[in-house]
Image (tube, rainbow, N blue to C red):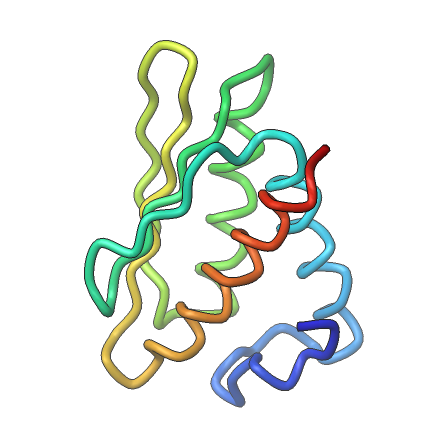
Length: 112
């Protein structure tokens, strides 16, 4: 997962910026991600612990990701103490969604 070979050609984010964006996702997940649930082949639910500004961070990153990867659809919901990000992808991009879920799960496991 260290490489970016899982990023599809349809992503319009400039290649030089891709490692930075992946780092933003890793930072978002680090220490806050509680659960990764693959609810269908085309939907992953990421549940994060809420903290001041967390909902805004999630919405901001999801919005910027939508700008370059239009095959993703993001839905952010909040409940007391939790920010949930549902990430959907079309059938042609299920492998990209799987890679994002695996990266999130790895970040969750790496937290002491």
